[in-house]
Structure formats: C-alpha cells, structure tokens
Length: 430
Image 1: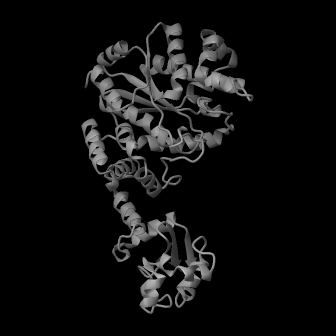
Image 2 (image 1 turned 180 degrees about the vertical axis):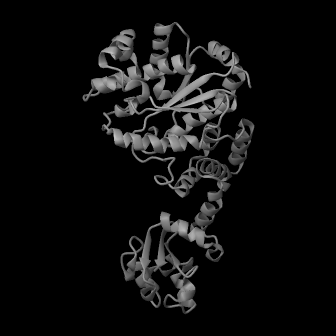
C-alpha cells in the first residue's frame, strides 16, 4: 500500500486535486491503514456521464492503493437534486423513475469498481435507506441544529443562486443538510473518513465535515478534483445540455470514440491523466510524442481507445476504427459487414427495397435520401463532388456505369453515398 503522501502526490500529478482539507492530517489518516471513502451520485438520469467518470476513477485510484471505496447512489437526495452549479431548479422525479435510474447507475459502477470480496472491496449504498424513515422533527433536531444559516449562505452553490432573480427554494437549500448527514451516517456506521467529488461539491463536503465534528468530535476529510468541462467551459451534467453518457444506449461507443478523437491537442495529456489508468509517466510521454507530430492525432487516438475500452470493452475498438476509416477514405472493399452495420446506427440511413434500388440512376438515388442534394442540376454541375461507394459520379460516368447494379452493394446490402468530404448517407437494401 503506498503511503498517504505517495497517493496524494500521484493524484496531484494527475491533476486530480483542487481542494482538500488539511494535507498533513489526511496523509496521516491514509497512513494509519485502509480508509473508507465515498462519492455520491444522484440518480436524476438513467446513466452517469463523462464528468462522473472522473469521480469514479478517483474512487478506483484509492481502491488500487488499498483503500475501501463506497459509491453512494442517492435515492433520497435524488428526489431533490443538487443545486450546485445550476441556474434553475431541477424537475422532481417520482420514486419509480429514481429506482430504475439507480439500478442502471449501479450496473455502471459495478463495471468500473471492484465489488468482489476483500478488505478493499467497493460497497454500494443508497441514502434513502437511512433518510426515508427520519421524521422532519428528528432531522431538524439531529442535523439542522448543528448547521448555521450563516454557514449555508456562505457556500458558493447557495450564493450563486441567491444572486439570481429566481432564487433558491427551501427544498434545494436543504440539499446541503441531507448530504452532510450522509457523511455523518457513513462515518458512524461504515468507518468512512473521506469524501471525494468534483470541485462543485466542496461546499457540501465541508458542511458534512463540520457536522461530523460537531456531533462526534471526530476529524474527517474531503478532497475535490477540477470539473471535466466542455469546450465552452460549462460542466457536464445529467440535465445540462448535450452530454457524453457512460451508457452505450445514450452515447454509442462510436460517438464517444469520435468525440475523444476530436478533443483539442492540449487536452490529450490532462484527459489521459484524469480519466484513464495509463501510468503517469506514460501519459506524459504520449502527450510529448503527440506535441511533436500533432497532425498524426496519435494522442487523441490513444485517448479514444483507452476511454472507450474502459467503458465498453476493448472488443469494440477494431469495429469502430474500421467503420470510421470508411468515412476517411480507407478502401471500401476492405470493410467487413460489421463495420457497415455499425455505420447504419450512426449515419443517416435510408432503407430501400432491393427491387427499387437495382437499376436506379445514382443521381436519383442521391435525391431520394435526405440531406445530400437539392436538385439534379446541383449534382450535374459538380459530379466530381458526389460519390457512390467512394467513386465520384464523374468517374462512374467515365466507366460507363449509369445505374446501380448488384456489384454496387457491399455485402449484398449496403451503399455508401457521400457529398464532399464530410456528408455521408448509408443506403440499406431491404
């Protein structure tokens, strides 16, 4: 087991420390032996997202160092929704939806943390188990009594909402107390002495630390990592615009891979460090090699492979790369059927009966699908800019191929249409 200083130094090297309680005291606690630590995930959607992945990997790094992670899926706090980093109040979800969301999220967590038997095995908990039966009077007496309004008003998550015309409801205002009580219960019942999260949770974490100290006299600890943000600087969140979800149903492995393949050059190293298990020295070497020849995009490709494999298994990588290669000019005859089938789930796709497809003029075929061309005149003015299976209409005319025939169908089923470099459409013969 690495020392506390060694573990925290690695986290710093990976860019995973933004705020923490007393560093020396935290190191001492980690050095005393296996430490219980937790991170909370509210089931306000049926999947976690790429921003949550960093917190899961933070738990995993502690687990790999011999400590015992607790993943809290907040059935109680999920009914309210965390106001941190939000400009408006969440829509409430009913218990059945939250339960279904919780089950989906638990399955994702089980794929990323080790829940097998052992002293450092991860544990799953739901704060509804200790919250649901508590009366309002008991909660005010046992929790509210120990937290001052002045302290709560000073937290950034509250201050930012108070400055807006819509303000903050008492329901959301109470979220901090519920999360603080979670830390108290986990410390009391499951020997949890550390809470980790993204930096937007610092106010909630310190409220929990203070509650534990006031009720028990014990010292517990907190650590946050910088948020994973979009290109425009906004955070990823379950209800904050377009997201990269960990669920393959919400964000396909192909789309996840393509997103990572297109991150800016200066994000390659930091994302490798923060979201993968690649050793620190290797991350720096990959980033340095990439900086020397950025046009090769080797750094982005390694990042895409690592994260996609982590979430969906390594078996999908070859299929994704084969399908993507088709769109960037790799010979279409080299592509297997699985690559085309993958593209049929990612590209605009039109299904046409085989009897209608055979013998059709390629110009008429291009007009039959949505989004590639507006008129025959537009196509005939630029026959070199429209393609059937990577062959331009101009080249087909020179080869005297005026209509679609069986040999145009790849694997007897697929035809790839294209305008310019980036507009693609797949035709599937029924």
